[in-house]
Length: 250
Length: 291
Image (cartoon, each protein chain N blue to C red):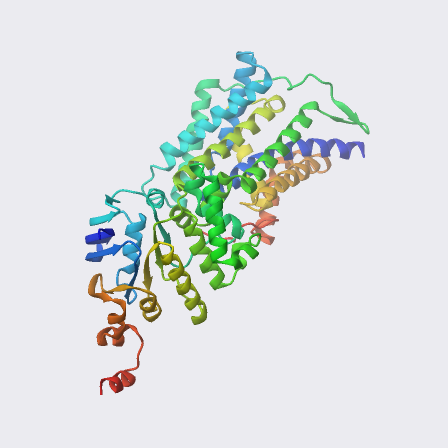
């Protein structure tokens, strides 16, 4: 099957510093992909490049057969990719409903009012708590609710590819689990998902395939369950104690 | 009592104008984190354009107001596009100095176009002043206050009810987040400049009949408007209106009961007091940070 998102030899630059040093990866329609790795490994930078915020990159990023080179974030959103940014970046003083509606800004500009209404119903069905909080300023929500709002806001743009940057950051394990369940539900509805996580275990448990990043390159890739049992991944990212790790080896 | 009422009326009139100018400062600050120190010059250009249109071309008042507003707003768009967006390193302090430079440029250009003399223009409607308890209220004052409140109201509507207004607010909250959602923040900044300077233009048109417009009127008006915005709380819309009226009324009372020499000093005295006791303004909309 033709891949939905194809990245080939991507190099990203912050000024003179190369943060991503030649990464290639591909995402097929309907997959959940996890990108894991330590802080500063280049995962978020890759997200910035795909979403159009970071413009200084070389290589190839092709989405549904079209290069996204030179597109700014609104154009990327219109082409069908939405990013749930790191740290959620909701609009705290605006109420929940307005936050969600602004997620559909590009579609509302194109006068797709009814379709946006349908998306709103879809999002509130997915996160009923948001509907209860419609008139509340987004800043008063709990961390988990804010993450749901951030995901909901991105879904309002009706993406075909959803990127999530550290959705589990600062959230309780139970809520992380809930969010991963939601991602699974979304995938069943046909959405393709790329997930950047430091919480490697949660990400790999939800994902089909994974890529392991280290200092700007991909050091390992494979099926998620294989990565979960890979001894190097275990030691470096799954937070197993050395002792426990040794026990398993014996 | 009669005396007090008279001062109060003139204070309300000036206050309404300060309020509209302060609104221009505040809404631009809210959307772009920028203080446009050339805002007063846009008010001046509004006033002089109004004089030219009504006195020179004999255009009726209402169409003249609309035409002036469009002209001044267009000038504001041009200003953003040519002088603000082209800055390579858009740090606040650099941009603020650019606006100061723009103010000198606009004043000089206005002097070349309209000359150094002050102009005079009749009231919008030739109705005699109204007598209230012995004090006289000018018809133009009623116009000024009405139009000011209308502007504040429509701005409130714009922010609370329209998609563009909410998108602009979102840009002000977090530019990057707004951009990621698909809001083209550059367009929003341009729009903010257009609306802000357009409001300055309206302020110019309504005061033209009572101030003898001249090329150098903008600086003081701009500073007073800035004071009013700080007084009410920079970035807060209703705070700006409140600050404007407060400044206008206190100024008028200060002139009437203490000394006419105090007129301009009053504004800055108030500003100092506010900065000392309540640095965020009466209605704080933003947290204060120092450069």
